[in-house]
Image (cartoon, rainbow, N blue to C red; front, side, top):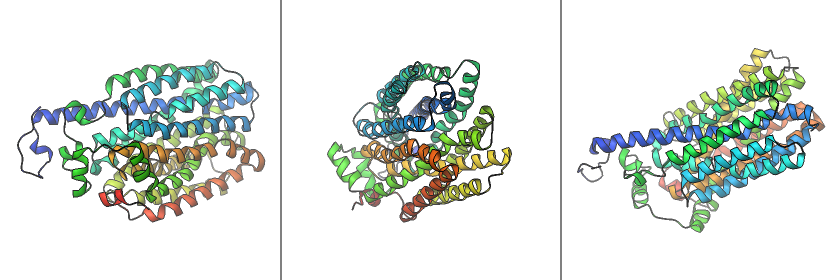
Length: 447
């Protein structure tokens, strides 16, 4: 592959050979559909347990606190995995990390399906969580290596819909599998599929453009965050793990703000997704299939929300992620109040409200993680994603046993009050980031 001679500092796609342009298009397409399908499968396997919960209540005699404990355990091990896999992803083959993680997760899904005791559920779900975290940090790094800043919000938004697709299909599949074959098949089917897709990922993914003989994406598209970033990106300076953790993560006040706000965003997101089906069955007396169909609309809303949030942040807000995070989270708070304070909503209105929840919550769910990856050097993007993800899934852990205990002790009104409070706290934390844009100066700010 040859690159045409070009004047210094003039590096857009017109200066590259047709072969280079063709290869970029091929590899970007190949890697994008691979991580899209791959991450959908991670989510598919992770949430298959969630939608088996009503059957576990009746068939195995578990109560809400038991289910909440198992959900919290899965979230805690997933959070730790996401953090450590973020560090590992900055030092390892992304395709092997992501592919092998999905294979192991599929195997453990099968093991959960064979289990009947709370001990075995806890063992296999805990182990499952340890490998679930091998999906997100590699995807974040691949998106930063293969897509430049001025387009990344839209592409990240499209990728973010992958778990909406997985999340939309899994409640319907679980309901069908439970009614047709029993709850164990709601775990078997995703498990077998995940193993096959894991091998597919190992075959398809490549880490960086330079690994296949291409220039950096910033050079190819002439899209650098700043003049200072040109040298930093093209020199590909290797950072030590200590430098990444200390200088780019722990001393970066903006990473801390994003991480803590992510905790509250994830309490809301996971609690809505995990408990709304049970809420509708208990409070609204919906059937399993009808309640599952409402959760389906949560994920469909998430698809549109991710796409719209990415577009807004790239275009209307010129690459700033903060305004979208804040506006969408305020919308979540208002929607919670509507559902909480107007309990006589019809099925259609509940479905619309569930769609709006998905539309709004997946904006900050996507852009907080994306902002963290953009606030640091590419060499540290996996660790940054893993670090804020650790806080996110601490929030997800809170949405398990603690939320289940709150519901058991104080009822569903306490559930909505807790989520409303979390959304307000998230807004307050995100306010300082309203005007912040991603550039080399911001990347280097610490304190």
